[in-house]
Amino acid sequence: MSVSPGSMSLQHQFERMRQSAPAVLPSMLMCDFGNLEREIAHLTEAGVKALHLDVMDGNFVPNLTYGMPVVAAIRRLTDLPLDAHLMINHPAQYVDQFCEAGADSVTFHVEAVDDPRPVLARIREQGVGAGIALNPETPLEAITDYLDLCDLVLVMSVKAGFGGQAFNPVALDKLRAVRDVAPHVLREVDGGVNEQTIAQCADAGAQLFVVGSAIFKHERYKPIVTELSELAVAR
Image 1: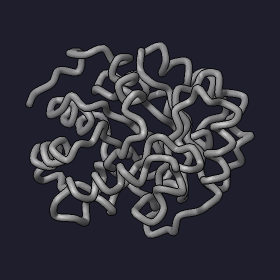
Image 2 (image 1 turned 180 degrees about the vertical axis):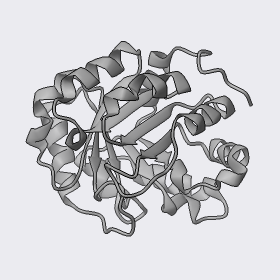
Image 3 (image 1 turned 90 degrees about the horizontal axis):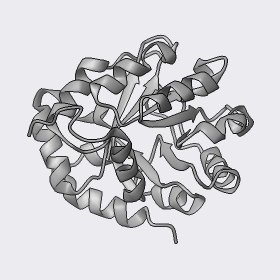
Image 4 (image 1 turned 135 degrees about the horizontal axis):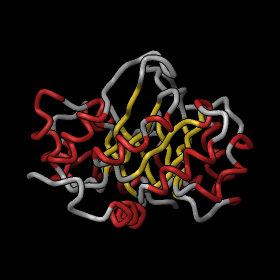
């Protein structure tokens, strides 16, 4: 399926993601990139509502992943909303390029900038969802002055860019706090989200759940996506 980046209103796409919440978003970093079209087809058949794209620059975080060309390639293969998570230094320099590549929301780290406000404003000018992320050790106070410009807050439950970490429950406290102080903001959680932790995140107020290995370690995606989606409903 070929989809032009301009074939659907980007703001409509972000609202589509918002309205799908609670939703499980597969982290495409864990997929088989040698069979990208097949992977996206299987995820679509499994009922996912959006795709999460982890962009790492090897500087802000130690790992290096992919950039705009891969985002554009994924955009051509699906009309699902694309949620881009920029784990990079100097995100303001790349906002336009990721939007042009087809991202429907762009999230950057508060730790990567001196002043998040102009970056959030620039993302919004592009007509896509503007998100801000924070690592487990970063206090919520680091973003509270900017929530008026946020469409989305991504609470990391592991330190960005490092694998093999255990879920940090400090994320639950932050999710509750964001829900209390900025109920208009879409709340996303990323890191160690699986069958054992997703319900806790939902109860704490998460609405979007980024899931990697808990999905991709399975041969068939639909059963696990269905199970996780059921667990993602707050009790």
